[in-house]
Amino acid sequence: MNSICGFMSGVSNVDTPAHRGAGNVLGVTFLFARKVDVVFCNKSNGCKRPFEEGKKNLQLTTGFCDHTKNVCRRGRQTTLEIMMLARGVVVALIVGIVSVSANLDTVERPIQIVQLVPTDDAQVLSLVHLYETGILDFWRAPTKVGATVDVMVDQRQKAQLEAFALENGISTVKTLVTDLEQMITDQESDANWRAKAIKMLHGSGRSRDALEAGMDDFGLSMADYHPYGDIVAWMGRIAARMPTQARVFSIGRTVEGREINGLKIGNPVGDSSKRIIWIDGGIHAREWTAVHTTVYFIYKIINKLQRREADLLKVLDSVELVVIPVLNPDGYEFTRTEPRNALVRMWRKSRSNDRCATDRNGKQTCCKGVDLNRNFDYRWAETGTSFHPCSEIYHGAGAFSEPETRNVRDAILNSDLTGRIDAYVTLHAYSQLWIYPYSNKKQSYPADIADLKKVAARAVNAIGKLFGTRYMHGTGPEIIYAYTGGSSDWAKEKAGIKYSYTIELRPSYYSWNGFVLDKSQLIPTARETYDGIWVVLDTVAREARGEVDPVPVVAPTPARPTTTPRPLAPGECRDVESTDPHFA
Ligand code: 0X9
Ligand code: ZN
Figure 1 (cartoon, rainbow, N blue to C red):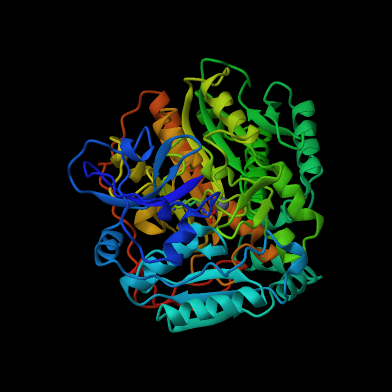
Figure 2: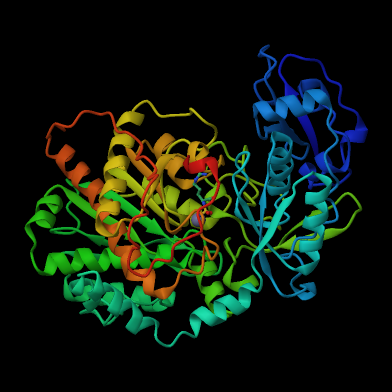
């Protein structure tokens, strides 16, 4: 049993049974179902390990008591929330909104993307609460006043969301995509996309990149997405032809029994005296661009290696690359089974077995899947995450409860790679962000943040140089939103990996078609990302060689252009400029 409660350290227990919904795991929903009363958790209310018990700083946050485990877990912690709770504000009732993922059979089409813009702190808070219930699929999570929030809904949910918005005074509610499935179909059936892509690359003077639209030397086209099996077979062909420089490896199996395969690239491969750079993609099933870009990264490196290009050979003198294109192959393959069904194509989580939750009316809902990027042991289940199995951001039954994340953990902490990894780079989509630790709250930094920031600034700069694509860099909560349980925070804090980054690829934060990147943008996206990652390779290799960086450690965040817009990148669509203060 779980209950929603506020935590105020050092204050006595005022919990009552009324605050504990019998069998209720939709703890956060309670916050909306009733007046927000502050409940203080400590040993006397049954929680053996309350958060920060004993401190007397009156730091207040919401969280929940997990009575099955006898622990209290912290939830969000914002000034805004302290204000709200202190005022005892009544937040709108949202218990009626039903998760689509829990009710595939009752979906009311068309599925749409709706955008809301909160205009004051209370509206932001109401949306944050809605986000953390995990009932809806937020393509863009709420962050601050004026920042756009994009949500995928079916017709019933749309009506409920509109009622929710009305009740909370959110007047800006617009439909960004009127029929997501039609949009996917239209994009997928553009027979000319390949020709368009090639023409654009030629037009921008990048004829060499245009060649990549055809088959590579190992039989995979770089212009398209591919089934997981084809990617693994392709890596196998590379390793077979270049056995001294490339080796296929497995970090273990998924829930459905697939091997999670990657490719090690070295010169020669397997030299245990070299430093390691780890690059992965596809932890989120629907983020196909991340898989494509990781595959392309392998392609580009192998191609350079075949040509014996000097800059790469110099890097590989001290560094070995470990690349895993699809960390969540079960999820990825699932999204490929019915790519024109939005509920399949937009699947985010793993495909772990059904887990069930009972709501406050005693109704049970069961769902598959864990958000693997909430399942790592970095402040697991604290912020920007959900304990409802039907949520898109469900964090699982415990840190590393999933085989996929355990495999990553074990490969990093207990294998031939252990102690040698200097960079961890994980690819996601979308928003054009280069994110460094930590993501739990603002101003939460590792001690060597200046080094991470410097390399991030250089990477973003390198990306921009190619086609003019604009990336932001910073910690998650500073440029997008807070969350915990993510892989790159864990890699930094728990595995001690120096350069740990989460990269959100194209399209931009303002984009309305988010996860459905036009195929003509695939090569440009992957190509510019390659240049950004190259900065990490170069940095690690230099440091491994003992070179001192001559550039000072101060790296300004790139300023937002205020005058003439830059030329469009090949294949890129101009997004309507938002009033979003994110980029102010
Ligand atoms: O929420 C996530 O897991 C990632 N974003 S995504 O849209 N690809 O799902 C990572 C967000 C990283 N940024 C933050 N620290 N917020
Ligand atoms: Zn992602």
